Image 1 (cartoon, each protein chain N blue to C red):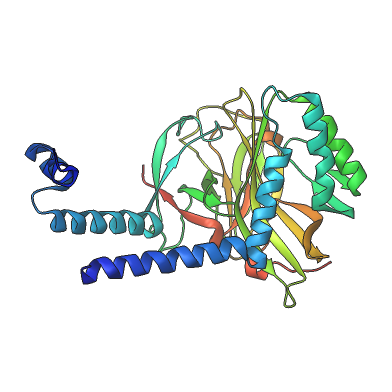
Image 2: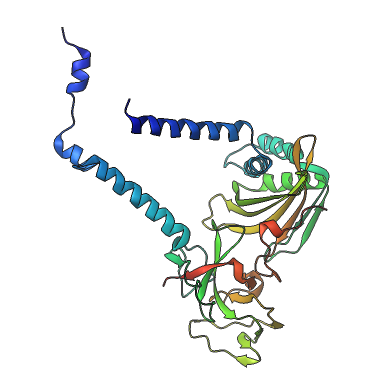
Length: 179
Length: 176
């Protein structure tokens, strides 16, 4: 085998090994990203999806949040709403899921900042929601705060980031971590 | 009896197809492709960012569904100016706001009877084609903050995304 071919093969094998290592043994940041992407898929509703699968998906949301989760929603054109506790959140999501034909939720540009002990983290991200059959979509920036509970990252707080009402610039590394 | 190995080697695509796919000199062709891919990647990351416009907040200047580019180097040697249309990032650059800068750091910005007031004086805005009745109390911008708003003032004020943004969130100015 020629030298350049061997070199290319070696680089490919090393790249594959690094990729495999990251997939099977993800660091905390990748684990949080993967978990949030899975959450986005869970709250999405396929067009024509039955009421029972929707209900089951809403029930499975409990796996992502702490019991005392707090969610502050400040969407443009709507009143501010605060959800307190996992049960209230699941009821609200279940109600919303039953009333939409289809909904695609995406979490884009997930920036994860871990605290010094890797026990809690803040994920700054852009949420994008597209309702089935509508051309336009809604976007909103959020800060998800998570903590490690029994080796699982659980969300304990979600805050809406008012992108165009800021008084200072916060980079992900400057976002305070913790309660 | 035929030898399958010989048969496999004897198959060669027509010369014109080989030339079209990999060129006359494959090594040079490969080098050109690598250079092109790297150049496109670098240009997108550091020079211009293609964007697909969605929404109506910048009507009539920018139509829903249009295509444009963000010049990332526009503010490499100068600061944003009043009237510039800029892209503002959210958590990242997958989705951005496209807005016009109307207030600069230190300015006092207000809307009265739909007119933009900067430091108490009415500002002419030739890019608008609709009036509005917006009332927004005066607010002085801190250093590093810019006030941005869309050109479509016919929208209800509460439904129009606008306000202050730090300099760090401004990705660049649109090309046209």
